[in-house]
Image (cartoon, rainbow, N blue to C red; front, side, top):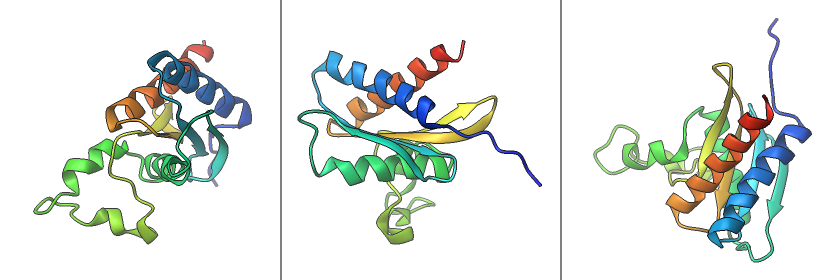
Length: 141
């Protein structure tokens, strides 16, 4: 039997608040998703003006980061032709994301969830996701 540490709704709201604050600061309304360690959605917010098409992308970025325990941008280079993970983005029904904006949420060395962000450039999405994690970590004390 194993005891798991996972994000809850309060954690998800803190992650989203930190991400949304950074998105507002850079002037890019985002779609922000938070999942538990198994990739199941806990909370989602589409900021006013966030792209409708980014809803599913943000959720799938969070899913990838948590379930694969790896940042989505790390799959970018590895999934190119000739690379070891070429074609992985078509795995599991196309849910595996290979562009920046999905980060695992780590607590005490364990992946406890994931955050996915979409609507900006991959670099903006990744920065907003990181801001959410930084805000959450600061709230942990």
